[in-house]
Image (cartoon, rainbow, N blue to C red; front, side, top):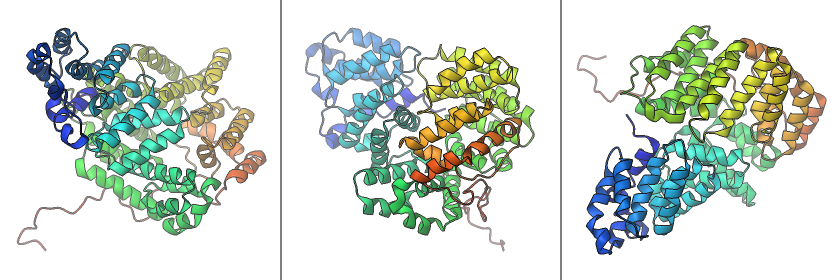
Length: 526
């Protein structure tokens, strides 16, 4: 079982594992070296043991803290550890208070900044988290390389969600520069794309053109290929992609498959499964990843279970095995341990999605209410997830003829038009509100921060109507996408390609192929 996020972070930031060795590489002294007060030195060994304990005990840390009443570096070390443990609690105020003090007492040390990155990411201060992490990445890149993948993805998501694309790109580009140790194929492509955006923003077009081959995800390449902001890159993208984007998509799938084959973990399975599902390879998703859940127990819980399960459940639903999808979610929900925390909401959200996919409106409303009630007990979570569930609930209310409630929900979701444009578009299509959807797409085309989504929306696509919700919304989307005013607005800032990009597996790609065996062949092998 992997340690919780905070505990895993402490595993590389204890005084023994990180504070002392970092003194040589980051030119900073450890709190132990800085401890000169006789009273502090008397409890120094106890403090180090409490911080190093696995799993960390808040009671022991509190007991040590009580023996350190003065504002000393050793107290700062203990407060860093307390903040990381307290960050697992629903109330983030105690974690924020602890890490604020640690930052004041150890202003030159990277470890409190690393802990603060996690605390501030999940307590509503992503910009401060980003700035602190950027300092760590310069001061101690070897420590920054060990950042928690979940935290960094959440940090980037929150930065982009609030419209701070420049800061998000700086963090992404820096992750790529330092060789972020746990980055998978999607993140590697994101970092490369951020580097290109930063180069274009700075007027370094030649650098941006040179970086085109570093973008792995074919969808990231295509997003630049339809946006006039990147028009100087179009010839290089066309040359690199072969025009159809099949070649880079195949390479990207091979990269995802290699990540998966290297570890066979839930974390590496999730991006591979997500990409296969986006290409309608649902049978492959089920055959590859459903067996991972056969022997799931609380004792064997691993990070990523709660994010992979919804993808597999939706794939089961798409191939006509909806009951198996529901059963999978139920099995996973029963096996999630207490330390999964707010991640249980991934399963609650998946129930909402499956109910909406099959137009089971009463179930969608009930499940959405369960999600919204549970999140109140779990502290700060991703705002995008809340908006998504509210959109599903509003859709279900409208289809259930509960129009007054639906209008209230619609107004709330519309507030997120600039931060969650795709979610808003789904809701409007479900409510058969083509005029508002047209206006929404045109507004998003005019906004540079959301233009990428809007240009992707207006492109031709491979139709998929396997479940009722898709059959319900597809005609509305198609009418809006091809309307003359939307097409005109799109052509001002980008272009509409003549044929779909993606939507199915590229020719020649085998989802199940495994890497060559390292075991020697037998002497009688042919």
